[in-house]
Structures are given as structure tokens and as C-alpha cells.
Amino acid sequence: MNRRRTMILMLAVMLFAACTPLESFAAAAVTTKTSTLSKNTFTDRYTVTVNSANGTRDYNIFSQEASNLSKKSFIAQHGCAVSALTCVLSGYKSKYADWTPSKVSKQLEKQVFGAKAWNANYKKSLPAQRPVSLYGISKILSYCKIQNKYVRTFKDKQAVKDIKQHLKTGNAVIIEVNNHKQVNGKISAKYDNRWATSKHTMALLGMTDTGKVIVADSANREWSGQKQRVKFAKMEDLIRYMIPCKKYSNSLYFNSVDSCGGYILVNKK
Image 1 (cartoon, rainbow, N blue to C red):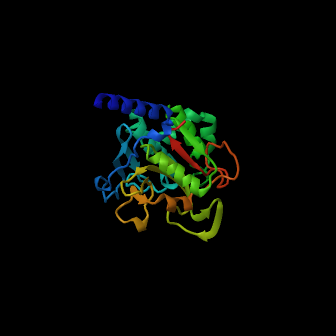
Image 2 (image 1 turned 60 degrees about the vertical axis):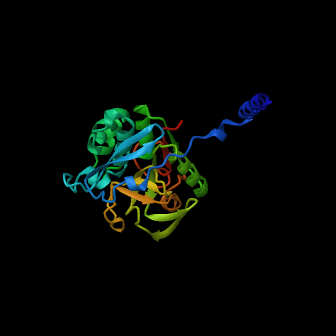
Image 3 (image 1 turned 120 degrees about the vertical axis):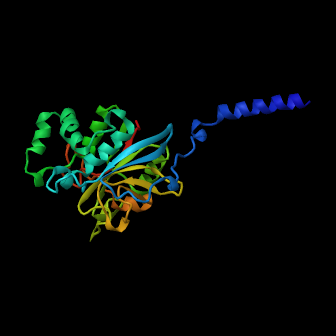
């Protein structure tokens, strides 16, 4: 009798599995314990270890105010985007583990975009040079065989859900933030420099076990104390500074707030 009941139970489980959508068996969320993340990352370069679906990833985070950089260098003045890109490359491809933002901007950008497009930006005077756009970053990631999805427009609530879900797969996101808050694309006239003094690009590397986003930031912010290269924030707060596109552009370098916002989901088709 017991054997028959066991067989019936097994058949029931098999039938349930066959009739249940695969989405119901989603993998457990990937997070990183806050206790494993340093509280002092006020340094020129910091390597952070973040959990991924297949173990861990080591990301190099660079400061735009590093002691070896001139204040008149491109990286110091416009290097946030290439710093975020370099950080992500270091975590996904061992080939780029030791590359610096300067090397990526001078070599990889030129290789991917071509000499003509690269020269058009970097032959300008330093103040007129522009950082690589999210579209440009997406092209470089694809060239390096890192799948990615560039999301240009969004509504806040859906974007928060989308980004959180992606971070919980153990993959990174690259975002553009503003020096004004916004709600669903409506930008406030009030100046707010919490995350940017102008426009700023950052990489989100994962989620902590306490529900905070692990932010890789090349800029120093006084409010964050000793937590500089690695900062923490709620996604619901970060979204207020992000910029949805209002226009479509394939410019490789940043050219306007309206056309160069959005976010990139790294390692996603």
C-alpha cells in the first residue's frame, strides 16, 4: 500500500512539474553580504568582490581624482563613463582585468569606433571633449562579446523592478544620473548634486543582503564619508536621478540629456 501511494505521489509531482511554467522555478536571488564589503573605499583604485550566479566577480573601481592624474586630464574632467565601462570590463573579461580608464579611452574606444569618430572627439579642446555615451558603451561591450541591453526610455516604477531583478541575477547595470531629480521623465528645475554636479555615469554591481544597490562610483561625494569607490543606495532613490531619453541618438559620445540617458543591463540579450 505504501509503495503504491509513493508511486502516485511521484507521478503527481512529475505532472505538476510538466504543467508549471519555467518562470516558477526562477533561480534564487544573488546578493552580497554587506559585512563582506569594506567600509573604507576612499582610495584611487579599489577592487570589490561581488557575488554572481557562478561564484564571484572582482571589479576594479577607479577614482577620477586619483593622485596620479592631472586635474587637466580627460579622465579627471570627463572620465566617469569610461571609468564605469572599465569597471564592468574588469569583472566580465579577464583580458581587461588590468586595463585603466585611460587605456580604454585611448585604445579600445578607437579600435571599436574607428579613428575618424575617435579623432572627431579627442582632437577638440579638452573642455569640448565628451565622455563616451551609453550607446557607445553598449557597442564596446558587444565588441568585447559581453551581451547587453540598452534601455533608452523608462517609467520609474518599472525601471526599479527591471534593474533590481537584473542585479539579483548577479549581473551589472550601467546608469546615467543627473544633477536634477525627475519623476517619470519630468525633470525638476531644482539643482541637486547628490550624485552628479552635471551629468554622471556609474556602474551598479549588485545587491546587498539588506536590499541596497552596490554602486561603483569614480567621483568623491562628501556625504558618503569613507565610502567612496563603493557607495550604497536604495534603487527607489537612485531612480530619481536617472534620465530617460526623449530623443533617439546613435551618437558614440554624450551630446545631450534628451538623447543620452537610460541604462544598460549587462550580460542580457
